[in-house]
Image (cartoon, rainbow, N blue to C red; front, side, top):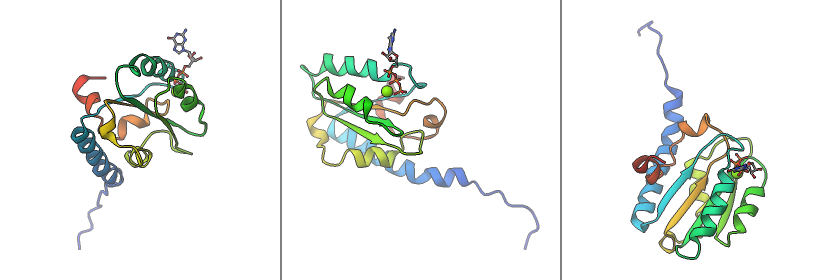
Amino acid sequence: MSSEPRLVEVRKNVLRQNDVIARALRERFREAGVLTVSLVSSPGAGKTAFLEKTLTLLHSRYRVAALVGDLATENDAARLARSQAPVKQILTGTVCHLEAAMVQNALEGWDLHNLDFLFIENVGNLVCPSSYDNKIRSRRRRGI
Ligand SMILES: Nc1nc2c(ncn2[C@@H]2O[C@H](COP(=O)(O)OP(=O)(O)OP(=O)(O)O)[C@@H](O)[C@H]2O)c(=O)[nH]1
Ligand SMILES: [Mg+2]
């Protein structure tokens, strides 16, 4: 047996399951023809304010919906719901970013074929979300 130290890449393995779910999500979005937009920024940058306005403007012409992540409160969902668009809050508990499985669970009961646009507001944080692939089509292709 070799006495050489072995490097175990833990982070890669942990994220692999996230990537599998994220890929499946992306395929669902593509198949349903729903354009999905992910909002990532520092806390308090104005994601919810921007999204409330956007949903309100789009709601009369397009089928729009939103998921919004927060550690503990449903305040953002309540603000976004004023637009009359369907909105679900994702409570992440101690996790400071959205993971693909959270998005997948939140979409249960929603028929994506009934949507034109799905907006996903990530937890206010510029560090963690960049490591987690939610496989949002528009973010990569359109540089949002
Ligand atoms: N002056 C000004 N204030 C803004 C603007 N956008 C947001 N705000 C204010 O900034 C504060 C934070 O805005 P939010 O929309 O809650 O920011 P957020 O990025 O969703 O915050 P988190 O979800 O906590 O990360 C609120 O008091 C908003 O009213 C803007 O364009 N101009
Ligand atoms: Mg917000």
